[in-house]
Picture 1 (tube, helix red, strand yellow):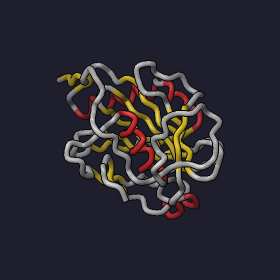
Picture 2 (spheres, rainbow, N blue to C red):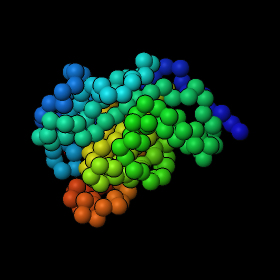
Picture 3 (cartoon, rainbow, N blue to C red):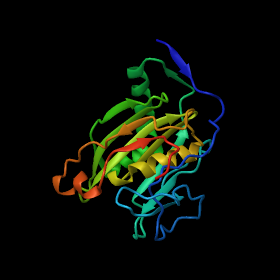
Length: 219
């Protein structure tokens, strides 16, 4: 089985933010660089980020973040980075299996498992070569729909969770945290969040679902 070794240093490039979320309200967390202040989610709500304090951070990766969209004071999303394995298989299926296991055993993964019920979801490879996994989930306490995104960017394994309408904001925050920039600076894929299992809280209440991933373009 072939092995692909990750670069020893983070990716560099312009920080790209998809236009989609910034936040009002206060999460109560310490101040942090706000990666989402220029963004709105799919419902038009503005968002912001702040340091996440309820999980153990990986000292070699950017600090975990809360994402808060809308007028509420409590975060309704999160993005976490941890160091990815030094070497991953070249075979897609084997690589996905490794990344899934690492994600599940991380502090973000174990915490999410206590709060969310998730289906397997699916992996997509963008033209940029990124492996992206999208999982439809529901909150155990209340049944609200959530989406979990997993990807590997440079030396980092990125995990994000939030309301489905927050998908572009979560993607943008992951790109900004890792200073990721597509080589051509153009949209590399379109992603549709999976269907939620709760019809009354379906995609219809969250606006348009289709957004380019990992793009430098703004609305």
